[in-house]
Length: 357
Figure 1 (cartoon, helix red, strand yellow):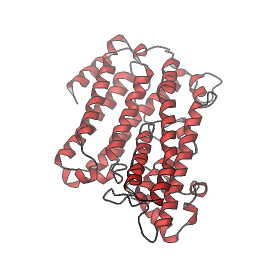
Figure 2: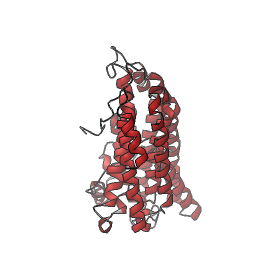
Figure 3: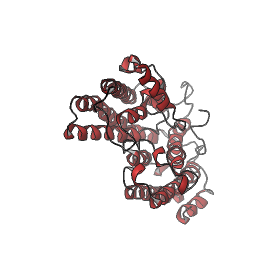
Figure 4: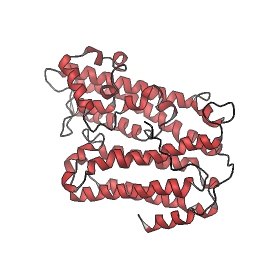
């Protein structure tokens, strides 16, 4: 752990938490300043994916292939920036798993996709019927498997016996993704929807009895997001040693979007924290924690930027060490956010939103 982080954490542990603080302003800031714009942006990018699929399937020109890659990368990028919102609209109707079946260490998605191809299952070719199938075969992670090969080349629309089937299947996933993204954005925009529940905590609210409870839901999603990036997205790729590293385990690395996804996940968490404007909720002696958090997030992004995509093809000893450094820094970030910030704000910062899943 970096000395700068450790020093701050040790100092803040002695701080007294805020008493009966009102967290509504911070929650409202997060909703209006980050969640609504970010989910709306994801809906926009996902909404362009079906046309990109149709175009590359109709004509695999270099221009269409490039446009397809850009549309898909934009979708992955914008999804990565909201995937930590593991509460409310993104969890309703199992939407998060239907967007990305992660983690999948046993390759369940690939096995189920093979069965679809073997049976030439027509129910996978329409968004209306695909949405009722396993989450493993209707998600963007499934799209990665059918639209790209192991060398990150676009195979969608390429000549072959299953060309039309694959194009129809990819189109169904794209439509399904666009519909889910639009529903999530609409639910967050609704002033009488989940946002209202977060902002009107009290005895009559079935979900949140206090603004503190509502804030813990939002804040714990942020800290859980750090855990997901480190434990689910990075550590499996690192393996137990350099010799046993598996860079293909980085999500969306098959489409060459692995580093983009990791960077987007962490940028989303960072800017969500910034949007909340937490300074008024922290004792003065803890204000420095926000600057340290920003410093560490910037260091992580700089390290990820130094890596070369596609990571499954460019992974070296140096890449291993850099990615390992990111994982170590994320441990410090998580400790700072839970013990160094949540405690002084009076929040139950050690809670993990993945517990009980």
